Image (cartoon, rainbow, N blue to C red):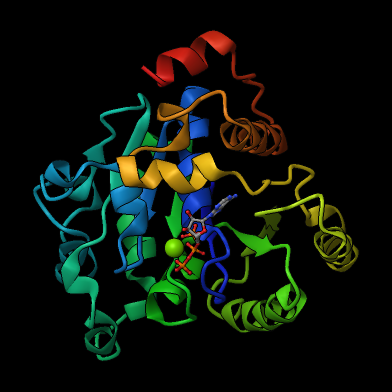
Length: 270
Ligand code: ATP
Ligand code: MG
């Protein structure tokens, strides 16, 4: 089971949108998927779970990371999509990074918490905050690979090369961390800038750039206000289809052949 961290220290590049909608798309292909929201902003939690469900687990993610509660006790089932589980963030994580700095084994806590549940899932996605703080570090130590959303805009490559340097440092703690790939997000094909950025990212990361490109699509931006992934909001939108192709591309990389049928998409959308 791959654990994939979705990380980029740059803010607003589509990390959470990717965690939410790739997670939902993998689940729609009947892959048992867990999304862990490591960002105290809680956007993945609110994009996947209605408010009344967010605090229904026996433990919080804070309890898992700081008090050693089992991760399984912090899991909430998605009400919209079968095969999809969520560990919502907890408000206590805000400010917790300072507290965490003095904890023994701080970078290893998430990795250890994930060990007992590895067999229960086909994919685990870790949504990271926009900083290289202790939560992101914990995710990169826990992960097998890192998926880097890159917004097709001017300073994209600068952020990307900074991240790659930081990953070298992380490898001292997690030598087997792989780069799953860069994912071009919010792409607008009408802009030549977007096209040249996409080409530059491909030039920089080569085959590790996903062939799937996520277009700018208003449905992707609207779905979170309905507390649902786009598949459960507008399964026929370009945004929903692009994340389904990303899921297929990812499954193929892992030798899983599970094309997403129209019928399944329909069922996922309820
Ligand atoms: P942060 O760094 O704050 O965690 P992020 O990297 O997780 O941000 P998102 O929250 O996924 O980024 O996206 C930033 C904003 O852009 C959100 O309002 C989201 O709805 C919107 N957005 C993301 N992807 C797309 C897209 N493909 N098309 C249109 N809007 C998008
Ligand atoms: Mg986010």
